[in-house]
Each structure stands twice: as C-alpha cells, then as structure tokens.
Image 1 (cartoon, helix red, strand yellow):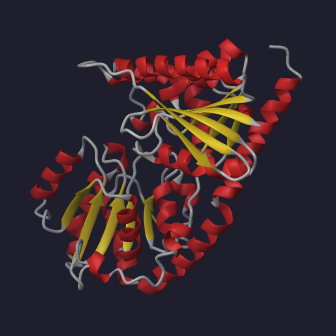
Image 2 (cartoon, one colour):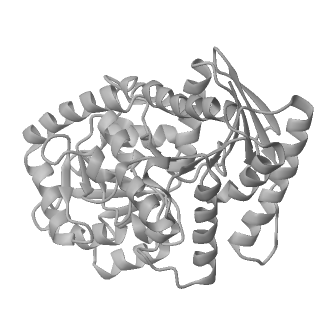
Image 3 (cartoon, one colour):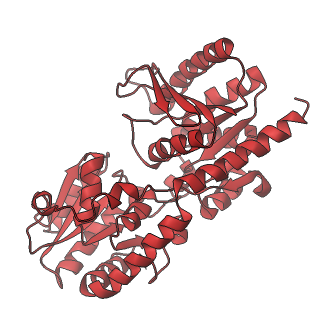
Length: 402
C-alpha cells in the first residue's frame, strides 16, 4: 500500500502533539508494509528530500518551500503554503503514479489534500488533532477563527474516513463539525517507552543541578505556552503548594506567545524565584527532565489527547492532569495518576501536594501507569489500527464508482 501523507509539522519543525504523532507513527506504518511519501513545509530547514528507512517499506519526506507572506495573517500564509504543497503533490503523482490513499493531518494541509483528492480521484483520510472551537473554548467571534473552523468542517466533509485521537475528540468532531458518528474512527496517540527505559540507572544528578538544588522537589510541565494549556492556573496554585512544601521548584518548558504574560504573573505572585521558564529544550533534555522530576503536571483547560501525560507515564514519573478531554481517558484517577478540576487552582494544588506528600502512593500509581502505557499505547499497536482504517477505505474504493 502506498500513501501520500500531508503534515504541517515534521522534524526539525515540531510544535506540538501533531508533529510527535506523525514522527512516531510513520516508522511503524513502514514496518507494516505501508510506503509513505510525506509532504511537509520546510519551515526550519532539513533536506528537501529525505529517505527514512522503515524496514518493510520506506518513507520519503518531501520538504516543500512554504508560501512566505510578509505582514499578513497566519491563515493566508497557510493557504499559500497549501498551494505549494498541492503543486508539488501533482508533480509527484504525475511522476510516480497514483497513490492508494491521501492522509491529511488537520486543517493546516486541508486545501492541498482536498485538491489532490479531486484531481486524482483518490480517497482522503483526515486526522483531526484539535478544533478551533475547542482551542477557543467555543468562541469563534474572530474572522480568522471562523475561517479555520470552516476549513475544518470542509476537511471532515471531504474525507472518506475521519480519525480522532480520543472518544472526547470523536464527540467534538460530531457535534462541532457535524461529521457523522459512524464516519469517525478513534485511534489514540502513543509513546515510545524505550526513550525513557534507556535512562534507567543512569546517573542524572549533575543534569538535575541545572534545574534544582538537591533538597528541592521538582514539578515539571512541558508543552506549548498558550492559554488552553492552563499554565496560568498552575501559577495560581504555586503559592498554595509552597505554603506546605516551600522547597519545591516549578520547571515550565516550551515556547509560545503567552510566556511573557505568565512570567509577569509569576512576579506579581511573588514566586518568580520558584518558577523557572526553561523555554525551548531539546528532546534529550525533555526526557531527562521527566526522569529527574518528582512530579509532572499538565493543567490544560482544553486537551484533545495529551501525549505529554503518556510521556510522564512512560518515564515512570507521577503525573497530575486536569479532568478534561483526552486526559480524562488516558489517566485513571488514583490508579495511574491524579486528576484535578479544570481551571481550579485549589484543586490543582491539592493534587500536587497529595503526590508530593505521599510518595509511596505515587509510586504505586507510577507502576500501574507504566503497565498501561506498554499495553495500550504502543506505537506498533496504534499503527496497526491506522493501517486497518487505510485498508477499509482502500477496499471500499475498489467497489465504488467515483
């Protein structure tokens, strides 16, 4: 089977969960015999063409020149970049012949995916990683927000099948984008435990000193710094935690437009010496921080899935999440982690303190979480579920008059 995949993110351009999902999924699909040609904008360099040896089949990454636009909105830039992706895709198909399927990840590549679908009468599968409605907590009052929402609807309408990363997202796609329930398949995100298993027994004491003193407890959070990730709620919880655990250091890693606001709020709360904004960190540093942290906290207000929770669980790090979206499905309260009420600093502080004050209970949850990750969120298992969707669509296409 040969699939043309489109993704806005791929290394070295990784922003959030979408990029991680595509990066981890592709090699496992290759091992199951799926040949992939990936079209992605070359935002941060990398070779124009890169062959990734996947075993049974390979992936060819085609980094396409983005549609650069000066002094204009992001939506227009996405549209113009899609024109470049479409033109490149047409040339690729004309040279290589048709693909069995086109797989588009989110609205950012919808325009190119839909155009290629119609031009070559090839079934389109869409993975929806999040919605504009969800990111903005139901507010679509701006012109850009409405435009993105409309493209999301268009993509799910044009898709033969839609993939959601959680049952929560399946309901959101049905209700917000009006996609039929039986058109949506749930295929979760995954995590590679080997990234963390290789750090077991490694002396990370010196690395830890870069982030906290030996007698400090480290609470770690990583991700895009945007309002829906709820880091403003974590900051409000910090003084409550420090009142009982004064030797606690909060490490917040990631970048985003909301960072300056959070830094100012930390100063207003008088906790800037207890909160360290690490900015962008490498994958290696992120994995090591998971291993040295006493607790990982993700206080999202909106979270379609939450790969970061899986990463904490795979690293055998106690985890606290808010009871929203995909987090609610991934983490079992008191069994594999602790849940807090969303947008509630008191509840979040209580959950953090519960983990810090009862390390024996936290350790029991850690072991349960690791077993769950290994059994349910292995990428090989997830790739098989994805391939099953591919095969279903390919089989249906054979008996369908376009």
